[in-house]
Length: 103
Image (cartoon, rainbow, N blue to C red; front, side, top):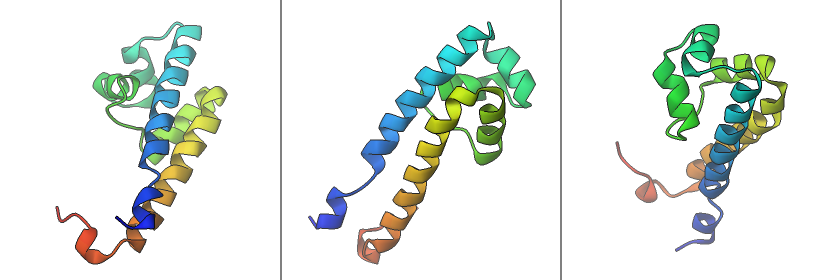
């Protein structure tokens, strides 16, 4: 296994996900919102919000921007996730083509 494989930021992304879902949960509780209320505010489906809270998915860029406007406490976590995803992309570009997954 190469040294690059040990530097994968996937582990940090998973930590970012749990931080994000925890912060989102706290922000929703402070404002007394449920999944449906936040989804209506953001213009998405309530299952999308439920998936964010359950750490199944992360918000896309447009939703991340909206969330950071409504919940300033989420800005740092969202920026961390964006930085880790960018690093993950750079890391995967460095891997040899034979090691890349084919979808």
